[in-house]
Length: 404
Image 1 (cartoon, rainbow, N blue to C red):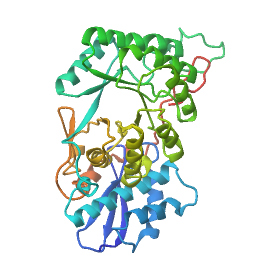
Image 2 (spheres, rainbow, N blue to C red; image 1 turned 120 degrees about the vertical axis):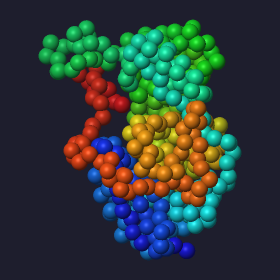
Image 3 (cartoon, helix red, strand yellow; image 1 turned 90 degrees about the vertical axis):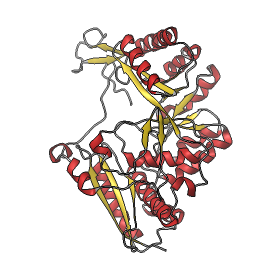
Image 4 (tube, rainbow, N blue to C red; image 1 turned 90 degrees about the horizontal axis):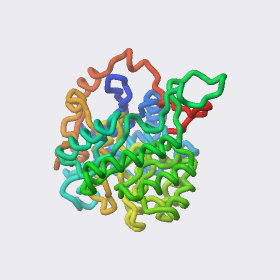
């Protein structure tokens, strides 16, 4: 069997926020790829991969579980986002290698498909209700079975112009202020409008992106109950997930949570106590295919579903890893869609195909995709890649940060 001979990373996309890890073996031409992308910490993740590499050189590439457990405990402290991302990329690459050795797609190695393709939910938005309605209709006509609905950016409907918010006389500079009550007023109105115009045949989701104070989050979930959402996403921040018990006591609005989760202690009680309906861990932040397969199995026993997180900062390799899990998991619920530019997709021959609201893997061995390293490097803009990126800094009227 093949042994690991080298592990290296490639930064790509214009801003260098995609990190693709290549695990090479002592068998000529046999290698695997994995996603270690982190929009805010690309250089840090690369350093983590480099630190792990000496530990794995010479080990059996086929010993995926043992390699995962070895790396997981190798730094003593564990379940951090950076270490998880580096570990996930290597894990994906090892599954890619195993599939190539077996001559089978990863989803066949994991037990074979339980569905023909992977249904996705689209991201519809608009600065006005009419614009949002038009965007929803567009995605519905494309074939998407579920559509996320947002008024502008995350927190849209809750922002007040700075000069209209009741701010202190020594207020810090900011263009707008997030107001919980405005959000509680406008988001239910948004869904009332959409249901009036489009009826109840369409399935809708909404992403709160954790902007609300916990007691107001419970209120929103209750207010949205008449509009029968497919799910309400990230209603609470990871620090306040205990409030999901109050949500369950108050209403039946389905809950999706987990985009920021990296630690099993975060998602395990939510699943086993049936406090959420969809778990939304990003495969690379959860540690890769190996642990996320276990999350999906845990979900099955408790009637919870998966909705692996994607988002615009993610890459086609992580998306494909999610698709392989989606294809084999009975607990699968829906997959978040992601769109890429044509020149970005050209870097990854064999990438998943998004068509008519469904993602389709191929029948090639492993993950089913390769990487064109020359095109990957050509995408990189050195000036953009030198920049540091930070999450949006939303604030309330008094200046308090809103946790995303």
